[in-house]
Picture 1 (tube, one colour):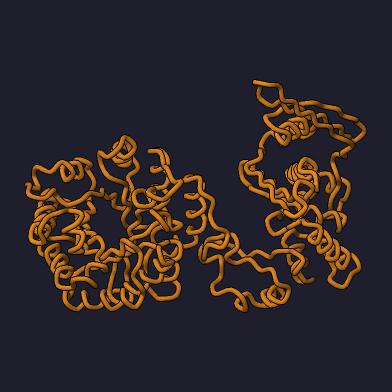
Picture 2: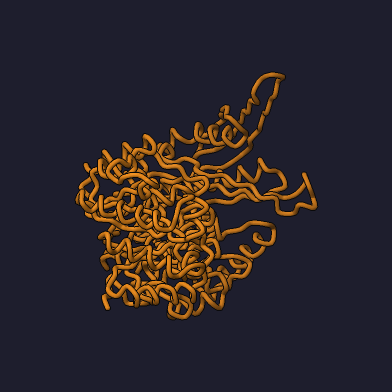
Length: 539
């Protein structure tokens, strides 16, 4: 039995049916290029002629000269008509792609209820449409919609659908769990039955995640003889999503011995997943297997102590195999190992037996008790550790700030910030407006510092989150503010806590700029110290 698996990506078609996902033609072209670099075999681009974006995509994608086969999606001919007169089939041909995905009904209930035709006519629709596309020179992937529900209701007819598609010349027979309600053992049994009855037929699997089983069902189908996997990056898709290729590919390749994509492409998986989430403007779950930021993150002190000896103690694979990395989190649960590991990552020398190490651990735990959280604010943690080890030479000193927020009837709110700082021997006092208090503070702080530190032009705030820590205190409750910042090459997060949301925002904002200037701080330390600096951060 072949150990090679064909990967069919439908992020650009099925994935865009997910709530909150909308891709422009440019977005789709960027994603197609990224998927091709990863090494998938098929990229389903959309439905030709259904909208202007897809029309533009199919026209422009030819200019990319991709290795993957670009595939157009459509349904079988209409009932009681001729395939050569069907506009949908003609648009698939006119798209100029090498392959077409043709969806047809395999559940007798759907044939009667949705198509409102006979079982015999549905078989004719499938056979005619496939034969016509094959006659026009296209590779045809036949997606048997609702196959598993159809098989459970009428196994003879569902089998007849696949047999008809095979007879008409379909290159792939793909069984779809369209409603996402089938269990892994059922998938295995049904695919095994089809593998036996249609001996030698090229079978594929397309699952949805309505029972959180899309990945498990896909793996069951592969074990039963399927050789094509259809899915999406990050599991995007309608309702609860499609099978997540970011979990399926490494599991098949690293654990089950199948070849899905080139081995040297697998380390691109994490970058691909995160890149596509950025283009789609959808936040990735931090705990997403293999590619999430928390997939190889360790928090408990005992765990960290163990992974520092051998990462296999708490990691099922080496994260580098999929392009991810190990992370050690620091929190109130942290032990000495967590802090020492973070310090080591930063190039800092921290003696585990020293009073200095004990104090910084106690300080972190005290701050966490106050409401600070460093798991999602690595930049604030790094500043704290560098301060504790004497590696932080402050470039500016805060003295005061004031806020003015004014609202007049019928007019938008006006926010103005006044900031007083000291840089070296200079005292600075600046004012700036913004579309809100935090934006005004950001503008005033930049206005004061950019003459001295022009590199701040390269950074900007990319996300801002506020969480109430104790709802029982209502409007007097403490809040935790997390700010994410970016420059051309990096992303970092900082935290602030206060019962005043403006003060908490200010803390996180100042930390963000202090972190952006770490390269400048390292340079000044180097000038002061002729010895080799202990740890430089490239920003």
